[in-house]
Image 1 (cartoon, rainbow, N blue to C red):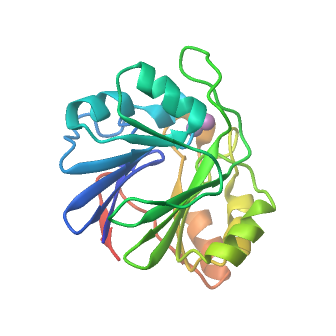
Image 2 (cartoon, protein in one colour; image 1 turned 90 degrees about the vertical axis):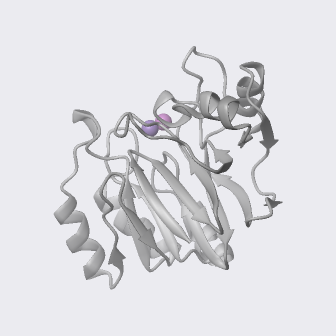
Length: 220
Ligand code: NI
Ligand code: MN
């Protein structure tokens, strides 16, 4: 499996020739060309997460998986969708995924109700990946750590709208994940973060910080 960072909270996961997108907001990578996209996940309705999901779904025929209300919104805009609730695994063939709670707000770019915001836990090739979406630190992360035991956690660290570094470090402990990928920082002034401070604090907890370059990828 490969994990590619598309900037902000956007990732492409490539497994057995199939690509899965999460929160494809592509302002950091305007020339990105979607290829072999099988599924698109959107954690919540905010524009910096919904991003180009609807356009990519229409051009590739890959469905958008999101919470029920947000999926319906995308469906009304012409995307193929899988609406889900929190807490039920769904099998996608390449692996399975479950939506988990995130503590944040959620509306569509034109101001409609978009259901509750989510994180996503994925089981791909036997590895457990947790993408937190936009969230504050919350005790559900202890539950996620206990039940799903993520190997890799993608955590927002930019503050203002989400957790900051201090809380992401605490989250990494509650989640029990050994590899921590920071996201949702330095895209805008309001979410500036000192990435070296993040790396130092994560290492102090005995974990591996994986700071990804935009368009960079790691092999897992
Ligand atoms: Ni948001
Ligand atoms: Mn956001």
